[in-house]
Image 1 (cartoon, rainbow, N blue to C red):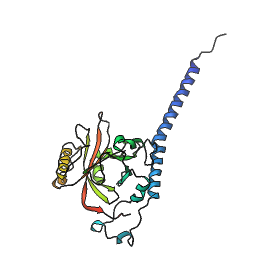
Image 2: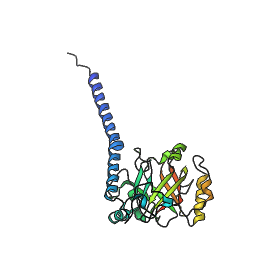
Image 3: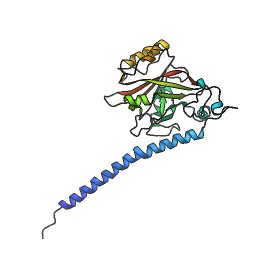
Image 4: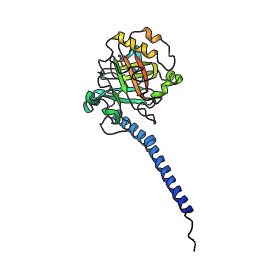
Length: 271
């Protein structure tokens, strides 16, 4: 009696293996692209909910007297003083409206400057990591405030920062807001680069306003599209440098620079 050919069995086995690989891959993608981003959003919402901005005594809404030129602060604030009492590594809160960027900014000791690369504000492992300030920066003193974040495919952290390489997106999202214990400062985004540390040394310290100006001029030479040069006619005492990975070549970075908007500082917290 002849044995049955094994071809059919092998084909079925191969199909089962392919199906298992497909399901595993789909599960992996769903976990990283859907579940983890959702958990991250819940974590941030929980943090903001636990530390709401307290009302200033005797003031509310449009009655607050400390708003620049009568403007209400465009972003919701948090009680950063109370937040830092529980999580002292939080140095500020960065918000760029309608981009998904609305996160605390952490900072670790200089000996372990990338501690928060894959940790959340609770110091727990988190593949999304956190936005974190360069270890040698001082949020209240440094003229170059350098903030890093992962370029997540889900859009979490600085996952949408590379969208600024599109001129329309740049024009539609022109402002960033950095809250510290003292104030909320409005920044105007002025130029966008794709570079590395050699092409544009973004990690440098800036000694004075003149150094800030030279830094902005150097960035202007490498911007991905023409943004105008009216901002170079002004003198700034600091610059905000936002950095995430880019993948055009090894070491490439998406870099977005923003300068303080004169007079747009809310010394009292606003909501």
